[in-house]
Amino acid sequence: TQLLEQSPQFLSIQEGENLTVYCNSSSVFSSLQWYRQEPGEGPVLLVTVVTGGEVKKLKRLTFQFGDARKDSSLHITAAQPGDTGLYLCAGLPSNTGKLIFGQGTTLQVKP
Amino acid sequence: GAGVSQSPRYKVTKRGQDVALRCDPISGHVSLYWYRQALGQGPEFLTYFNYEAQQDKSGLPNDRFSAERPEGSISTLTIQRTEQRDSAMYRCASSLIRPGPTNTGELFFGEGSRLTVL
Image (tube, rainbow over all chains, first blue to last red; front, side):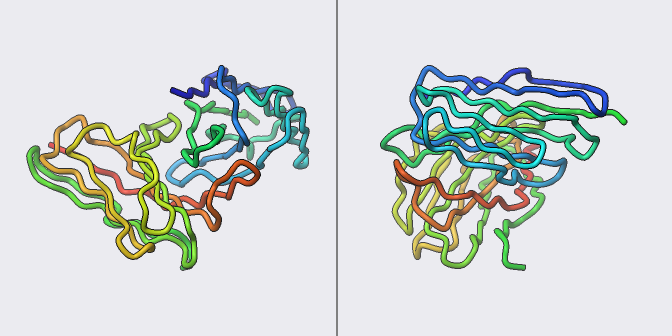
């Protein structure tokens, strides 16, 4: 069974602080995605990473895929209240289209 | 709109009743996924289809749960003899392309169907 472990589960920080969310597994994934979900809405895709060691930047968000394609991280610089939400990693195991999600990280950024 | 549409948005039923949840994906989207999501948690995989073919149903909790997508478009998730533990948000998502080793399509999620079993 492929599992994605996210940490931390909850994060409450002040505006302007930096943070990192981790997504780890013992399994190899052919690709990994990060989604953000706001209350009452469905998840929305932020980024897809497919190559081991790949780094992608989206404004103040930096995403990294581990060299072995078993883990990923999301780093937010100078967090803003608008970044508040549930962050989800989702992995596609090799040879399957079964996209599985981590448990999520709830981020609260206080003004 | 042109997004993924789910109905009903809210369903309250009594234990033992059957329920059918409908998902209308974005037109032309090949893959369709069903997930179950608890509040503040990540979506739990149930099943997915490429066109009309059910590719993986390993996440369906038991044989009371079934899903179909007979014409490769609209899908129905059916729960027979509902139990209180079935209460949850059920989310459908669709993707333009089939997921594969070199590509992963963006999943577009519907607003979900919240099921409450009394």
